[in-house]
Length: 267
Ligand code: MF3
Ligand code: CO
Ligand code: CO
Image 1 (cartoon, rainbow, N blue to C red):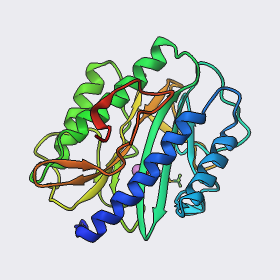
Image 2: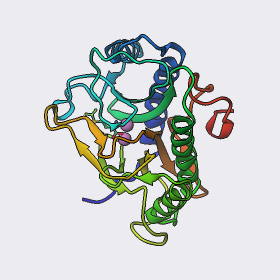
Image 3: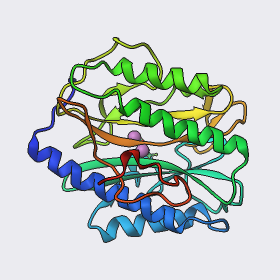
Image 4: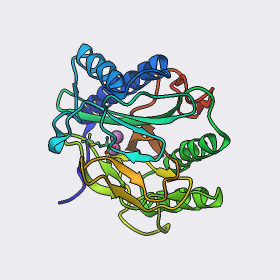
């Protein structure tokens, strides 16, 4: 199965849904606070998504029971919202995927609850920066491996590790399409990017070792094996001839995460 190339109408639809997911994530940043449960975050995302006329893609996706993924501290990804209450010092990734007019938009961020420890801040800022560096590799003719190499070099140079078992993915009319976008690897390897491709970049960065394990009881929650903290950011990206467009760019800065890292703010 090849990599779908989006036409101008598809791209416009992906801009619309990407913007919706971005705005829902911005709303989460405004409201998130110590004392909330991850179920409260789920309710916020679910209702905000429906209010936009969109649907939350995680709900019932391969049996996932909730409308958003909430991944706290050593949880790497796919945390299931529930009664757990977030507390000062936690970091939590909230991963929003919306469906509108037949297209998907997928974006996530890691939030600080109260004041982070130096370790929490380090792994979170390394994850944030690694996504920016990966995005900067995108343009027609570049290799998918170019993204992986810059992310891996940067993350390992900062004393952290890149998760291998989960990757970015093509996205469009389906949640997960070809290609796989690895966050590690070697430049000048893998598929070449072509204008009109749309995929996510979503590096999961661990403070310790990259090895992860899926919880055998819920079959979803992914944790670091060594118990170290993990952080992640995700955007949905369009490849263009000259570079890229961030389809999930935020029309404002994210509270409780970035200060004014204006790199992917909309002008
Ligand atoms: N949003 C995740 C991703 O970035 C996928 C979550 S699948 C779910 O690919 F079922 F857990 F929601
Ligand atoms: Co994704
Ligand atoms: Co996602």
